[in-house]
Length: 228
Image (cartoon, rainbow, N blue to C red; front, side, top):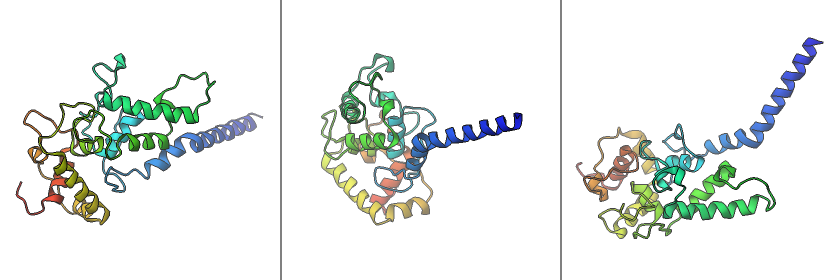
């Protein structure tokens, strides 16, 4: 009798885990296997953060954010508990609320939260808030452009000294290089060296939001014969 009960418990636990995996973890793992960065490289080279809400995790992978810089300040002003959102955070909130309106019943007793989005929805929301042309802070550089090259999309004072046209040209070239495989070949074939932040329009007091090795990769791809 004890053995039968033990067997039934094991079967029940395995069944519960399988169901949870199918509805929850399974979805996350399937999506994680398809992680790409903002330029479409598969898989993305940067692993998810050890801590952080799902949207921050997705941003960190998509744009190769420096872990020390990838904080709640991307969307929030001041203390996270204050729940004050910067322009980028507000745009993301609008997208999330629309998605929840589409998926959560109007009479649901649950308080609506970003944690109700599944992995697919989080990725879709991040893609929407970083679509070409959406400039949350109104500084002349769209969100994707700022995140790609290491600036804060919700702070107008965080902007490069270069013109928008220059960075738009860089982005177009990098997308083409990623599409034809040259960027991935460069990533695998060379060891990163020190990046040159002023190449991207950073002042001496500014710290890039993205990992230095990514800026090195982009600069090397754009200026293969330049000396850094």
